[in-house]
Amino acid sequence: MNLTTYRFYPWLVLAAGTMAVFSALGLARFGYSVLLPSMQSGLHLDNSQAGVLASANLIGYLVMALAGGALVPHWGARIVVSGGLLTIAIGMFMTGMADGFISAAFWRCITGIGSGAANIAVMGMWATWFPPTRRGLASGIAVTGSAFAMIGTGSFVPPLLAHSGANGWQLCWQIFGGLSLAIAMVCWLVVRNSSSMPRIDLSSPYAGGASIPTGRQNDSWHDIFRSKAAWHLGLVYVAFGFSYIIFMTFFVKHLMSAGGYSKASAGNLFMVMGWANLLVSFLWGSLSDRIGRANTLVLVYLIHTVAFAMFGLAASPLFFTAGALLFGMTAFSVPAIMAASCGDIFGGKMASVAIGFVTLLFGIGQVAGPAIAGFMADRSGSFTSAYLLAAGVALAGAAGSLTLRTLFRNSNE
View 1 (cartoon, rainbow, N blue to C red):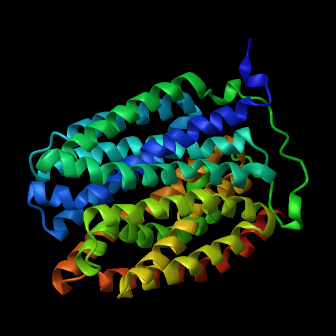
View 2 (view 1 turned 90 degrees about the vertical axis):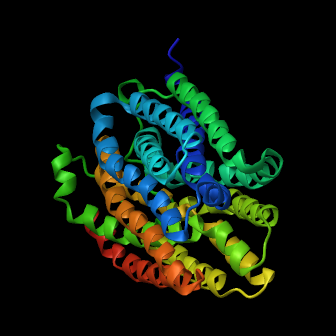
View 3 (view 1 turned 180 degrees about the vertical axis):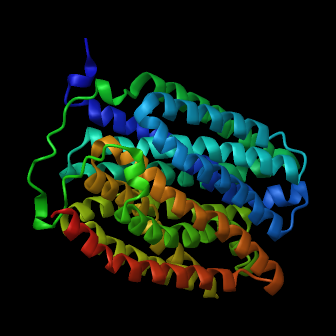
């Protein structure tokens, strides 16, 4: 019996993909934010070194983002997703055994390589499994995997750290690795390559009256790299990569140093932000199905601008909470919309390659953000200036998103 012919199977694949995002981004990247203060203490790191550790992870992600997307058409999503998750698990286990800055940076980089492979392959699948009228929704649901991880780490990690002593952060990384290994097995069992997928009618009318293309079918991955559309999307995506990673990397650290929060209370706000993301953020992908990708990106970037500025300038728990909630409600909508946009413009066959390319540019912003923010914090004594920089870059992203309207109009011609 071939289960992939049943109507429910795309949703089963979506569930497995959401679990993969839970590991690849939620645990591998955002789990670091909650563990950072304990890692700094255990490994005797300053803020600049803490930023470099985050950047090392993102360099690994950057290296594999392009390769991961290009590998999917040749190896299939099943192998790339499962292999990426297995690499993540190994990287996390070994991060938990690190005894110094160099070894921690190396294994954070290996973890990033696995994250890049798994996440890019997952987000590229929706262009094949879902039609344009559901593509934004599917991408939006998939990125809620990060929200589940934020909720879990925000509630689970602080008590575990409190009861495990100075080496509690190492135990947490090993637990994360075990979860990632289990998810790799689930994805190996559930995910199928494109040759096994049911045919999706991409010619169905687009709901809501917004102008969304059904996708160009490119013959070669070289076409993506020469595409002005891919460069246009990627440059807008850089603004998100640079700004949001500053906010997330130093979230707990800033709350403790500027707001007087304990690890537990900072973890609770991290968890609340995850709940806000889970309950609201996935709707932005669906909204982009209705009012257009460019219009939705403008709204999201403007909200991020306010959230980052408010969080950086906060002088009371009320403003810290407001900034966290604003970001939480929109947090990972940008990757979802970008994934849907790549499927719209480049079609299901080359969506993973296009996502890999725009993520390469996005990753450059991610690599630069934590290192620059950590350096600024060491020089100024606080993260306020770094958060204001993030707000300014997010505002530039909103301006850049306005120009994407022309891109989507032209792709219909």
